[in-house]
Amino acid sequence: MAQTGRARYAVALAEEIPPGGRKVVEVAGKSVGVFNVHGTYVAVLNVCPHELIPICAGWVGGTTLPSAPGEWRWGREGEILSCPMHGWEFDLLTGKALAHRRKHLKLYPVVVEDGTVYVMV
Image (cartoon, rainbow, N blue to C red):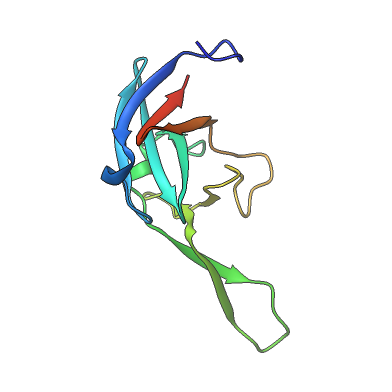
């Protein structure tokens, strides 16, 4: 048990989820997606808060960035998860929806120790 009172579950070897990769696992009866975002491991409950479908099957990429009128900028590649049903975009590092302030993904703490990825649920 962690100090937070959460149980710790070994879900993968770190090498099984390279940067840009993901693995969907069952943890404590929940479907959880584990993503490697530029070397940071993130665990997401595999449920879109919009329509309650498995979100971890969605596209991971970037998004448009604020820019001057008439300009178009793209960035945050590998940090944004898009819902496969309606395309809602979520920041994998914070869980926040990009366009819907009240919606967010459920994130779980992740620890990497001795080459093993653990999710705390």
